[in-house]
Length: 435
Image 1 (cartoon, rainbow, N blue to C red):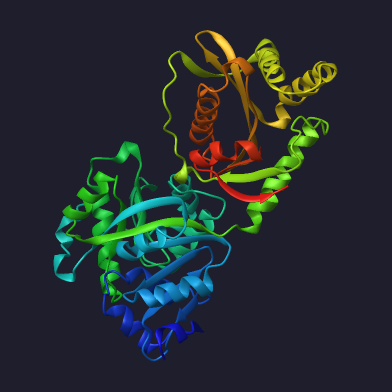
Image 2: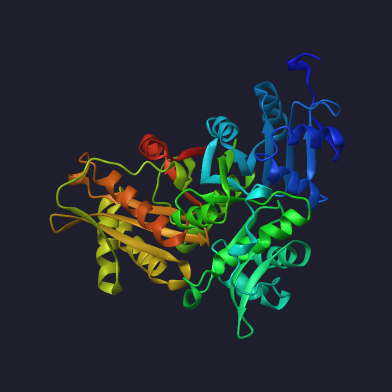
């Protein structure tokens, strides 16, 4: 069968698949772990007897290995349609090829370490270590860097079904480490009051010993900025084995982006009582993922963006906005009252910012908090006599920088008049649809 004639097949765990993955075993330990631990995970190959690559899909995350670019092309073409996708622990050469194709929404670049059996040194354990009590799962979750609404249940499964290790002091858990569902070692933490006592080494060696006794290879993926963990890994005998990256991408235009953009616009119009202050017949709906944000711009001497506080600040912000809009003089007063009412209500979740140029208010903008990780960009305006000097671009960029920093944002959404589309594209926004 020629490369162009290949068909990607959904299949089950098999000897041929495991043999293929073990040809580069250290790189593929996480894929092997998911196959072993998650029975509902989907497995895809191009040939069940002699695979040229393997894709494992478990929920949002995808685990992929191949040395064949034709397999990579085919699997991405057939199985990655308009949607959001995460990739977990991908061998960096493969990760780079995928990231060049799509918009990356987030990324954690990691170093891959593993512990050869002969490097295990049990003499490094200086304190009593035991498995984590299931009752302590909430404590582990409380200190987890990537804690979310689902993490507690994942932690409970890790404790119940896979090796874990902990040092307890006076009956209270002090230091711990678990094994994830891909068999990687992780969620390591030592409470501040118990640090510099060697507990991290104790639990690391103990869990590695348990993993080796089960017939597996201990491994971990360390975010490259985490210098403390790399030092601990080396101290415990782990060896570096290249890089494994975690990242998310958007393929095409996912329907949720369209739906949310429409919804956030509807919410915005509701707050201003349906007043149409943009006269264009159609609006360019756009979205920005922080990873693609181009925040550099030519500095404007004397320009700052300040958060609006209090009723006087809101009134000034409204004055700048109204003076910037091309609306009928007879409508300005009533629209100002509508806007003031909308943005001053805490429940409407607007955050207002005003641009100051050499002490003079010259621009206005608002961030509308829609969900925990989504904000809308609204009321971007510059007074007429200041336009053409880069103030609008500076106002937008500075507001987005604040929004991303303060709100842990996944997406910034907006609906722009068509004539402003290029400005937003230059910042990193991507068109989704027109309304």
